[in-house]
Image: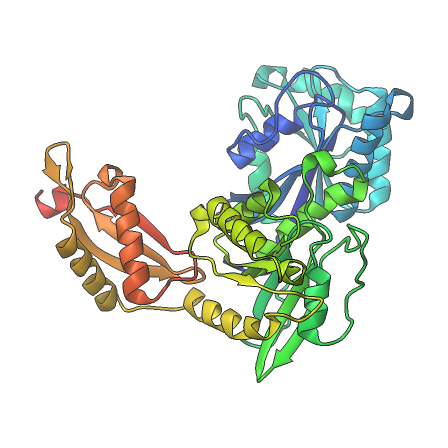
Length: 448
């Protein structure tokens, strides 16, 4: 996984022109709610999209409306959209082919021209090629040289446009860092102590530390050298629950924190010992899982409960219950303010990073597989015994293995977990995510 910054592409336009429908089609999900009522997309939605082997971060925004139509909620949506425009590398303006040119379209086109950004103009809801010429004609009065007709709902024209788009996307420049620099992102809710921990690790006041939540608006990098090894510390803005996100800039901070995950090898998930683990903390951990990042769960502000053994036990149980799905991630207690536990972080970082980038020979992997199969015979699938042929490593960070089997879909989740645990135990990969991909070996080729 490359650690350079992914291009950011923002979908903008009036309400109900089809932005969420296009986002869902590209992200192959239903993360954005599709509803005919304008203003349904209250917050930005974002996802990593890969098209023709080229990846980018796609952002869905709320609709842009004229000032006389704005209420308080709409004003927040407008500001989010303007922030997306400022941050985006490429902007896609969606226009409604059925409604034709509306007064707000003229204002939006003027806004985008003044932004100086690369902009593409897509005329949506052209569901039949025979309608193309008639529906496109009114939009040429906007003074746009090239219009892209398509249908987000049916997929017509989408492939042509995005193939053209990714061909022109400039590759993000490589970060100029010393070899084998360990990239660490600090994630968590506002005011959990991320900047304070960076300061403690660096040994000087590099970050602005404040008791006011949300001080860190953007990701801030600090390069640290320690005992001949280099670390890039990426401090990010706090991620709040949606219900708590009221200030417009805070909403945009979520996406910047997610982009930090694209750059890092290891994520520090900070949990407030005083407040305990929250649903939002588990969502942040989920972000790390989705992107295959190694992570450490740091229970910060431990000094606040240092003398309360009952609370310590309760908090430990809460964390274990909430993070059972990521049981391999080390849990470490620290106090960024008092310095408790901080000195033990660097040895732990080095240990996790070493596992994260470890490589194994095919012979070594197949020895582990053979031992696992001998210890627990593969079950039957539709009257046939599952057969595991061989396994090989295809990637690191995290270690990723491909295992060939006659019926991949017949491998029950319990047996798959058994194999994962065997490889973890035998290979010493107890602190990082591990991927095993099951692939079918053609049975006809081998006479089965």
